[in-house]
Length: 593
Ligand code: BES
Ligand code: ZN
Image (cartoon, rainbow, N blue to C red):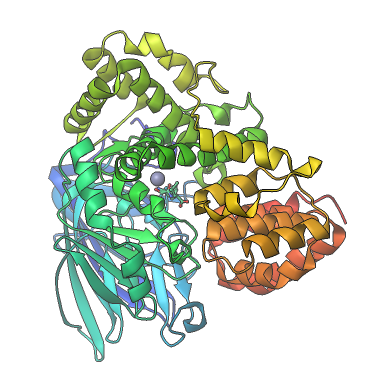
């Protein structure tokens, strides 16, 4: 009996699931998914088998039609409830009938007013890191990989999409319903099971890529992400063949709490990426890169999350560099550094949460989400690349992916393979310190570019009256404008805010990175002309990356704190549970008053 995952009751010594068969009915009225999950076991099995659940109502558990004895444990705030099955000898399949709770942490149910079309409801799942158990009873650990097949019944005017291949659609069992069929033949970690249902349209972008979105946004999305095939071809040249057949994308309504989620064959994306100038496609490149680092080679548990995200941020910047040149990649590294510095000041430089390998037993992984595994992890990978030399590092990365494809590994397995394939590199870069120690090692790579240095100098000169001339700023890319804004002091006097807004047209920006950076300046400066736009963003957009700094910046004065509380009171019912947590955390940090 050895649990190995701090966030799952999965026990590798117990019977294993070899495949999942899912039959779901999605009911928008009760906001429940009900149905049956059949666990196909790896071989004839018997004895205890522990599953993860959260807020599920279990109706029955059977094997070959006979009831299987089972009991639900006490609820745990982080883990949910253990469901222990007692399998009779020779059990090959277990069928569980159940339904989800309307408050399932894996799901968000949107009313029509939260969609672009305003007519139909919408629902989507977000299972990473440990929420698949709120959608289905299963061994919910990345170490327990499974292929799955699903039949999903939804109202006939809506479309269901999943992180799987489509095997068709048929009339549903009841009136005015349709059943969509799916097949994911490759074994995936359960956090990559994904479902969305809504009024969806699609456009083909290449023979193997398609964009899904509400009809109102699909054209804009198709234009924004038209470059996807080039990105895939570039990534394949770097990391090896794309192994998942199709690469489709789904643009969700703005309540989606993340920027992107790498659900296999169907990346989920926030509509805040639709800037109108393709300036935010790096998020797509990031999610695409997870097709190798994360989805093929997966972290064994959240303690090794840097293997997913650090490698992927590094991979993302290599693809960007290949497509757009080293300057664009350098900008990405610079923007990432700002996030990393923020995370370090949030935790303190000697916090255990600044380690790459974390120890999250008893810790809710959602509450520990930060830039550390992303940006510190990516810098560690970049250091290994620089030290080994690009050519041999790239060869290593392809060998690493080929060696561990379709498996879930620990940092220690990575290190062992590194020693085997690249003897001496680990000691040369100080891999032990990078992975196991707090803070940033002294040999952290620094990314320089002339353009970057002059932008930083320019924002640093703000207080002494320096301003970019029209000729200079006319040539700035969106990334450059963002870096400039990030470097500005705050709070700023109203006249300075007015100058910025007028000069850069900030309040009307379609690029949310720039818009939100501006709104944090405006919020912390109490600049009222921007408050209407601020209220609009906070009440429609659920992306945590934006909610956190905006609610924080509103802590500036008693007046802005009151504004934050008023906005939140109205917006709360429409927020994802995770978005609520982020907003409440930010407001809890306001000084009393
Ligand atoms: N896999 C993550 C999102 C995630 C992480 C969801 C942990 C739940 C738990 C995804 O790949 C991601 O990192 N998205 C980023 C964008 C990226 C460019 C850094 C985001 O959502 O902002
Ligand atoms: Zn990621």
